[in-house]
Length: 449
Image (cartoon, rainbow, N blue to C red; front, side):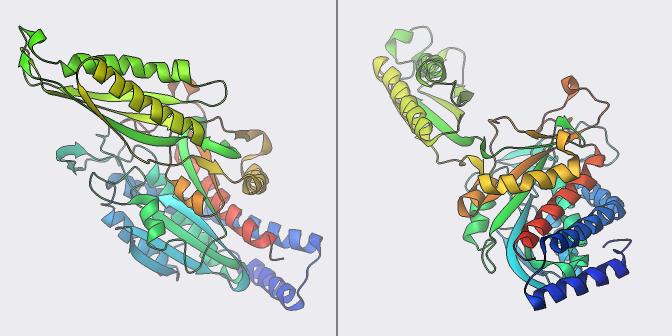
């Protein structure tokens, strides 16, 4: 809960004014702007007041990380917090997800805010006093668990936003949905989860939001900086698996069999020509990467089978289809030329994270107010992927990045997400809370006053 409540006089004054506007059915542009600015000022003040709470939540979640579809403790923490704030709370969405609904006292539209909760199978090496020491089983292996991508911060930030906006409920025109999502990093093998499952289980229903916002921390920018981009911003991501079936024989007489390792090596090399020779990379980035090559059990045996796996990153549906076709043609063609049978599997993967252009135009000045105009940048195209893209396929959405690198740390020393050394400067938390809360309030208010 908020330790220092928003000033009662200011709240009551604005609430009475807003109620009068609703009754009369109109407001002058100058009056509406003044009322919105008053609300934003209250958000700014309250974000500073709850900084210690947000830090405490973030550190607690960081010290107790949970992998995808296993966010039981985190989900329970979030659900209890939202219930204590008086929100309507639904738990168990997509296994461990939580959805909270805050209905403002004034009529208006519906907007959604999303945070991801899951951690990664990484052994933490930050040396923080609240570092994770958790270990668990993942895909049959004993692994460390760490919030190496900042989802602990995302969850704590949205908890803080819920605290502030629940205090301002009498002044809010419309409804805010708080979506705490599991398994953004992808569910374990053989399981469903993440944004698609939340959508399938009704996270965007009853009530239906008109728009959705989310953020992500990273060290590519310093604290106090933000970036977003209209249209495609993060790549579509697909996984591929290539199985090569040869003929096992003695390593001393390889001519007696068909070597799947030699075939695999040729396939790996040939796949690199897709980006370098088949795609116009001056238009949009494209990536084809082989990440695993598995085969054999003994140094003097030509094995019967080899297995490759990798990732594909694209920004355009036509290029995506072209790349998929070329992977199949090259892999099966090389296999046929060398006498091996080759099977190629490419999953549907994640769609492009693409920000709605009109909503991005709306969001830009809101973020500039929080971070200052000269500290909000146009994001470059990023070949990472995000399952927030599934929400954007259903309703207009904006996804933006905020800097989490300490200002005294040079960019050359920035630690990438998913590193065992990844950290966030906790000064990122207050402006992040302000930005998400401001986006929600301004979105609701712009069509209401």
